[in-house]
Amino acid sequence: MNMLNAAPDWPATPNAARDITARLAAPRAAIERDFLQMGEKLIACTRLLGEVSEAYAQMSGALAGPEFAGLVEALRNISGHVARLNQSSMANRAFLAELSDLTGQFPNKIAGLSKAVRTLRMFFVTARVAAATISDRENNLSQFAEEFTRLGGLLESNVASFADAFLGMRDSLDAARAMNEQIGAEHRQLLCGIGAEQARNLAAMESQRIWAEARIAAHGALSERISARVARAVCTLQVGDSTRQRVEHIEAACQKTEGIDDSATLASAYALMAAQLQGAITDFDAEIAELAASLEDLAREAVAMLQSAETDAGSLLSTGDAAFGAINASVLQIARMLERYERSDAALSVAIDQLVAAVGNMLEHVSAFEDIRQAVRLISLNATIRAKVLDEDGQAFRQVAKELRILNDETSAPVEEVMQNLKKSADVLQGFLDAGTRRDDRHQAGARDILESAREKIDNISSVLRDRAAFMSGTGAEVVARLRDAARTASDQQDFCRDWRALEGELQSAALRTHPNEGGFDGQADIISEIYKIYTIKVERDIHNALFGGVAQAAIEVTGADAASGLDDIFF
Image (tube, rainbow, N blue to C red; front, side, top):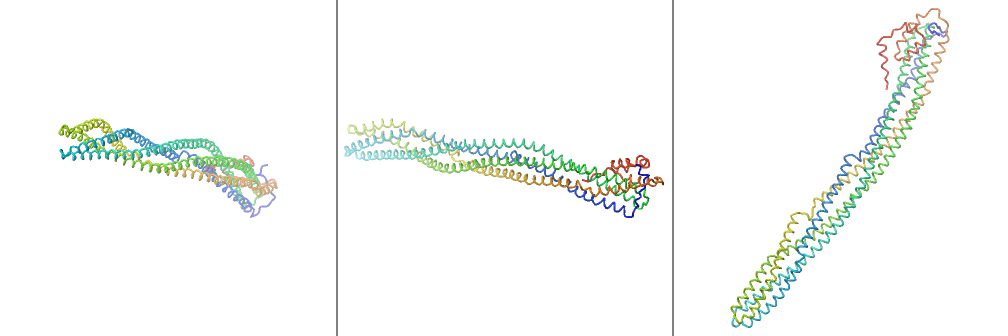
């Protein structure tokens, strides 16, 4: 029906336009408010989903970041320090073995020297008897025999003293070797056990990290899809803005009718407003129904994703805690091992100090042995001289001198060998002390510092895992709550247009109660043309043209500025 020729029998009232505008504005304001709130919630969901994904990635990142790399390096450095302590034990073993080899022949040499002392004692008795026999004719012979006996006593005392020193050194050496071997055995066993345990733990963490990376990739793809759907939902909210604009345009059209008392013109305007309102309601209902269904489905998908992420985070946290707990136990075991090592090393240090003192005591006999050897040679020479002076009476002394020369020849080589071994022992001892391998406090202190650093890194990584897992749990719940709230809001708004529907029916009824207009349509065309200029959305023009046909279109020229005004459609 051509509405330009319609004339209602419903009389216009002064308050009709203001009443229609007020009834249009109230639902429009509610839609603006609710859709703005939904938009804010959905935008917040997008942000929170990104934060959840970031927290999820940070959990895996904690197993591949600088803290974890520092932990791995610290554990390797611990092994290096412990290995160097083992090298110290090996150096102790080498020193003790070399010293044992050098002094191993001393018992035989000491036995030979002790035998020589006993032989000399017999010679001294013979010399004193001979001296007593001829002492009346040789006054200083007894004095010579006494000197002979004194030197013999000195020799016996030095040999006995050296034997005691050797026994003390040997006891210290045996104790140090036994302690060092025990420390070395325990150290090697613990080092192997710790190395194997650390390898297993680090392998478990690496496996878990690789698993987490794969899960994060899947989670990231799902999170991106959900975020994209949320973004589309935000775009769908444009129906609220477009509906707002279309209703505002109907309000503006209604305002154009103020002061018009021509019933035909009002009937045409009411029919046009009813058609525009019906189109806006239809489009709004369709979009809001789709939005509500989409948000409900989106909430279910988000719940599934977040539950999966929370399960993965729990698994990662549980496995990480177990592995870090095992690594921490290893670190504590190393710390206890170091404490035992330090106690044992302190005891070994005392034993080696005693050994050093014992070796030094033996070394004091080097000059004594040289003096004794020279004294024996001198006694032998003096006995020979005395025997020649006494002639026939010196027969006994000649026999003593002969035996002394034989004894001197027999003991010279052993004494020389003992002296050489003592000098070599001194060189070995000095080299050991100069190398400083007996106790290296730097490695022990370095190992302790690294242990403390490793435990601190373990605590930091575990703290990150727990913090991120807790954040994901709390934030995920907030995301779901916001999505469900937005979905409920959209569902509740599906019947929000009932006031508009009622008004649309009233406008349509008023427009239909018309009669043919005998006065033409010139006045109607003017107001309809003015209303057409209000439109900024194509669908509004389509409804207008469908209602009035080409008559109104021919009477209206849309300027470029009018068309450009349709670009301002963005509300959210």
